Length: 126
Image 1 (cartoon, rainbow, N blue to C red):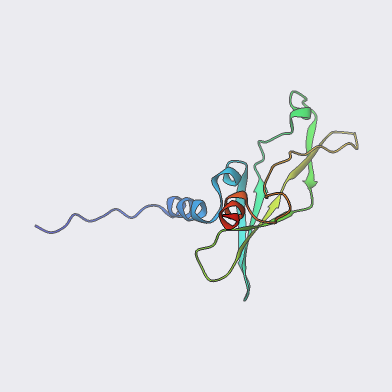
Image 2 (cartoon, rainbow, N blue to C red):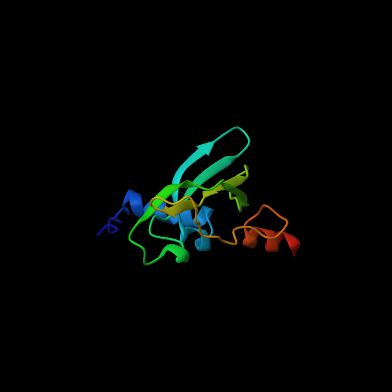
C-alpha cells in the first residue's frame, strides 16, 4: 500500500492563500488584487476597490456612475522575501449622472505618520 495521492488545490485557491500571506485581511475585505510588478528593489501589488462598495452617500440612488479612481495610496506591507512589498491601493470614485460632485469611501490603510500597514507599524514600534 502506498500513500494516498494528495489532490492539488486549484490555481485560484493557491492565489487566494498567497494573497492572504502578503496583503492584510482588512485590505482584502475591500480591495482586489489587479496586478503585481517586480523591480530590482521591490514588489508593488496593485489593489482596486471592489466594485460593489458604493459610498454610503450614494446608496439608494439609481443614477450612480463610476467616475475613475482617486489618487492611489501607497503603503508598505510586511514581507517574507528580501525586497519590500508595497501596496498601491486605488479607491473608486463615483458620482450621480449629470452632476460633478464626486464621492469615495475612506479607509484607515496606514498608521498615522507612517506609510505602513498598521500590523507592520505596530510590530516595529514594539
